[in-house]
Length: 89
Image: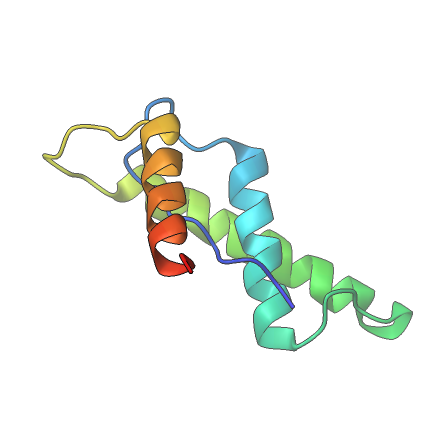
């Protein structure tokens, strides 16, 4: 039904509003059990997405770490390597 929600903390450059909103949509889709809400539920769905995105922005702004920032390219390469190893035949 939905893709995995990706980690957004501690990246250089930081997560964009679009990435945070995409994660919020995935989260709301997952807990609601539907990929697209009916017209009757569209307002509640959008309100939930906005609330989750706002909370995510607040969380990401408040988190602190001593670890060096990660780069998306390196993390994507690691994920591909794990996938290849996992699904190797």
